[in-house]
Length: 213
Image (cartoon, rainbow, N blue to C red):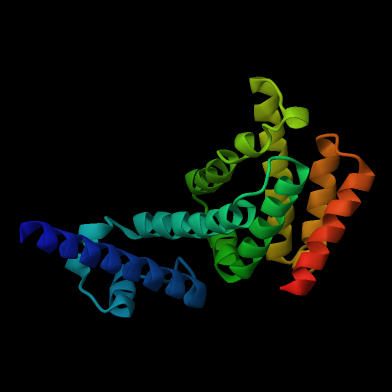
């Protein structure tokens, strides 16, 4: 049954690839990116250096995979949270709340990436991953804009989120996830013209949902 053998082989490849990514992530957090070697990663993953190079050409390629995995996990948290919600300010607030929560839950990895890794295209990769979602979330009637305004709105929204998250993860801002989330919801919803009373109602509903979790 060639098809089943191929399917099993593909499952094995995906499992091994994920083991290498997880091993790299563990070591990057434990001892830093610069201090981690490919040999240490393969030992952590329980495989050989030759097998590792079948999946990743070098440590930077592994780093990129770790960053992509990090971004995808946050993206999945956002997608799950807003699934079935109608477009509009509350959906935007929910997306922001769960994105911030997921990012800060991985603050140990984010701190390593921000503190030690200076690869601009990886930052761009993460920004683009989330920027691709925003036009869809902003397309509700009252929020709809032309292409230029949409791009500027997306960049401004993402810029605020990333600057605040980066400062929080680095320790420049001493605030918990709830405080950070509420600030960003207010700041960004104000920026796209949502009334203060409506913003407060949205935040209060989110707070009640969190209390019930």
